[in-house]
Image 1 (cartoon, rainbow, N blue to C red):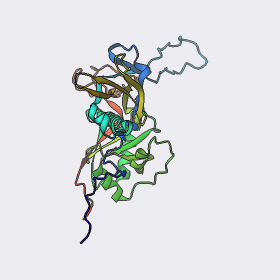
Image 2 (cartoon, rainbow, N blue to C red):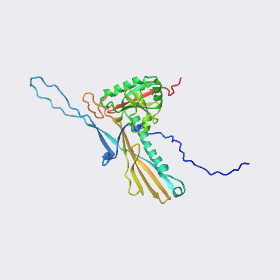
Image 3 (cartoon, rainbow, N blue to C red):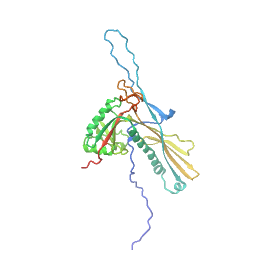
Image 4 (tube, helix red, strand yellow):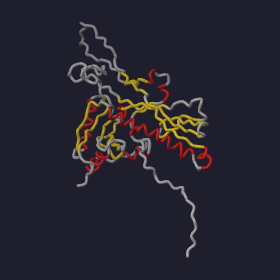
Length: 332
């Protein structure tokens, strides 16, 4: 008979890749950071929207019968960006765990906590897109020619004369991705190496009407947008390390997002506490302009001719939303 020995339980140092969604949407919008919010009233800063506008007129030729007209230089409107969320990840490690268990603190505790907090940015950006009030929307199906969708998207955003053509992109869910890939209408995308992260580079499946097409699994499969990066602004601030913390630091980051980590000891329960947190704010930029003057008008201005007070005020014209209908599978 064979010799049967009791084998000890063995854990090998081999890690399967985590089924964790990589950050994409927070990397393609405008981001503002810590210094802007110090001393800001109501935790709000106003971002200037460039575009001072002067008036040019024609003066009478050779005669001088009337004085020239003096006009005001107007514009330089602003959009409020507000911090309104404190996201955190907290955990405890008992004396027994710290003494007897093999715990790599940076790898087993801190890294998952930082990932959990920064993942909240993805959800916040997607929520911001869903609640944004876009002036333009396009209805598409799985059979709509993606090239025509791209051309029409570009035309509608161009018509509002706000967002420059550089910095625009398509952001789509998996059902729209399948339909567009099956159409063979996407142009090849040549990576510039400036996309920020490998996850973002991998999310770009091609170009359409001169803009990269980015796929995000954070979106619902039938969601899609055509955006300039300034259509949404994401604010990110790391809280200060409090004096009562045993240890801590700010500036720990994942993909450039700032968070704070603090650790202390809770003698009532004989355990260490580790907390990672960050302040977050997301705002969509609504700067629809009066076509006659080129200025952003007040919220109660009559935008569509239905009478003052009937509209929601300026809408977001730096992007648009797709209304997609149709199945996700492209198989016959």
